[in-house]
Image (cartoon, rainbow, N blue to C red):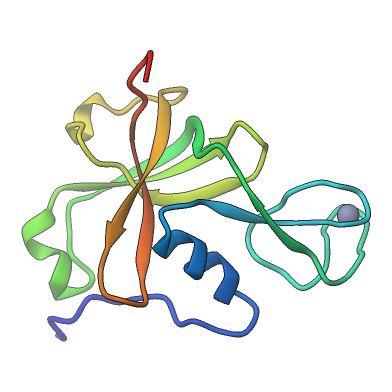
Length: 138
Ligand SMILES: [Zn+2]
């Protein structure tokens, strides 16, 4: 089993997303016709089917809408992170995004938990948007 971390592949379509993450900004595809943001990244708006979305910075705040705790490493890289959480976060702006949740024990994660984005720099090209519990008043 490879020890290397599986990482996203940058494409023409998702380049703007990863470039923003490298600047510690979370952006979503934004429809220039109906003004909605959506995720995952797609060439066409899922609401009105308009093409050529641009990017819009979002708050990075939301709530855990689903989660799983991994007890087994399907990639060797994750073995010493076990157990770890993969959460689905519903952003305040609406789209849902999957990521890891940091700074909280897996058994303390709850549906509805307020979270905010944080960024895990992997290399010069890839910075992963991740989440942590929202600290009130910051
Ligand atoms: Zn649209």
